[in-house]
Length: 147
Image (cartoon, rainbow, N blue to C red; front, top):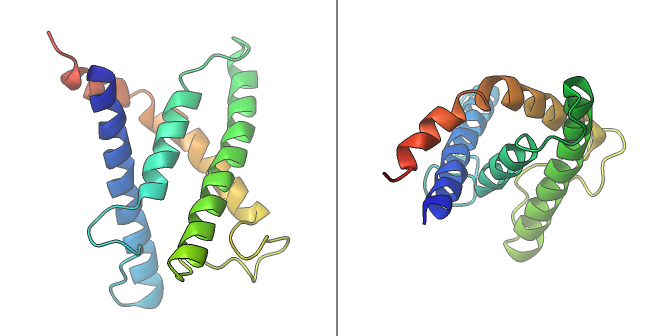
């Protein structure tokens, strides 16, 4: 039960944080309030899944050499987060007829759903996650542990 609570907490935390980031970014860009998702409420599940993946990846020691682990996990993060972005965009577009983002104007994009530039941005976010979130998150999760 404790593991399920931790998973749900991380998922909801990053779903809400992702919504806030997207809301601010899009609203400032368009100079009006924009709901960044297709759902009602203040969550973007794609960020929840991304947060879970990053939490799991950064919990793994691949080589036990810190700098090499950072490089490898960043590359793996870029691939996995881009895959989530593609799957989420594909589902939104093909099942809900809603294009949530469009990378068509970016070089080497694939169907406007993913592109190398944003894959690199996810890599930068992954590194920021490691240095800013990983040290802080266990102290928050300890609250969910039962006595």
